[in-house]
Length: 42
Image (spheres, helix red, strand yellow):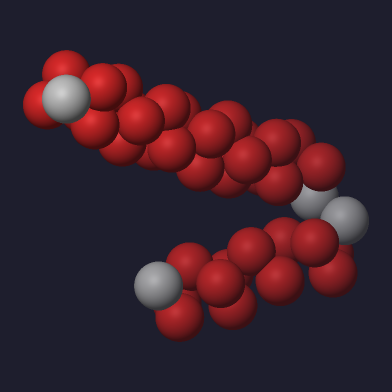
């Protein structure tokens, strides 16, 4: 996770909005997947 975090910071610092949005979408997607799996198990 450290590598991802430093990459995220670099992207934010460089102002690469497109990559930043891509990462955000990726995190949101992963969070939704985790929530969905939890709902399935309950």
